[in-house]
Image 1 (tube, rainbow, N blue to C red):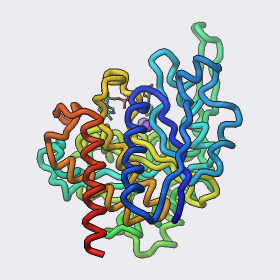
Image 2 (cartoon, protein in one colour):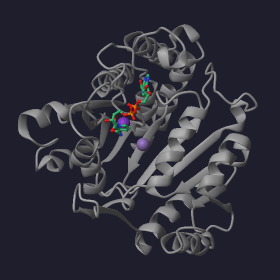
Image 3 (cartoon, rainbow, N blue to C red):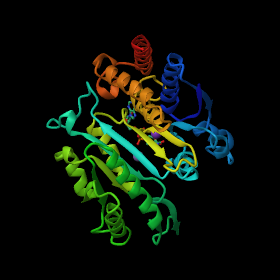
Length: 364
Ligand code: NAD
Ligand code: K
Ligand code: MN
């Protein structure tokens, strides 16, 4: 029997509600399947830790995660602590420390979800956005001088390296190649940002030669937002910079019905370090502590985590359980217009998993 070591980091806000729910789903899966088990270690890093220790996580925190098979993360963001401190002190520290340079965000309209685009059928929207996750606009380089003075000035320098762009581009082409349509759209803003973005376009062209079976095109990021709304079926795999893809993927999640459903993986494709999976949403201050958070984004993140571990069959089982419960509108949370609680949705998914395994063992 294989035992996977999983770190859970609930973080702040509704992260503390959805991550225990995600753990319950993994436990239900393991209970019903003798092939594998999980060994969890929970880390209490985040806003509360910051209030006690003045930092979001311990200085040598990465060492406690290094030997894990994967990390399940909730959210970093506390109403009383500035966002740049919570983000850089925890989530980005892990993403950058473990060189999780590919952020992968699948988007689909799940059964039973009332998505806002009236002309868009569920089959028209099946995207996977690849976000460069290690450099670009979020390199952390810059400065601010003469604070409060009329001559105050500030910069955030966007650093793009050839090595960084080549590796994300190769990752995106490979991912596109693995999907049925073999279609990739490279997003830039190379008309206005005439240095780094022109390099992106050029490197895309170079890498495309390694993937002759992938059909690809280019789109400027502003035009891409309109294309997502007006011609969603023309898109499949999408690759963009750290900032552009951050924005596009929230739009994608909203077009597919809710921010509460969407998952993401912060991946180290070379597998030198553990990869980290999380719902794309944040701490949701307006609903935190009420048991109302939609846990589906975390459950779908669990699916990605299982795929990353090579447990494809189990991943499929969890995805089927998710789709069965989204199809039932009585199990929709508030973000989807329903009244179900986090606990009810979680119990329903766990019950589906127990059933699926009984059926599988009967068939065997
Ligand atoms: P948010 O995702 O927390 O919330 C946006 C809106 O979506 C809110 O109305 C919220 O109630 C709703 N929502 C989000 N997830 C939901 C869910 N699972 N179920 C039901 N409704 C849900 O974004 P925000 O308000 O911009 O950010 C709040 C805090 O979270 C900030 O501190 C921000 O920095 C942080 N944040 C962290 C991450 C991360 O850790 N990866 C990502 C985004 C935001
Ligand atoms: K998150
Ligand atoms: Mn974001």
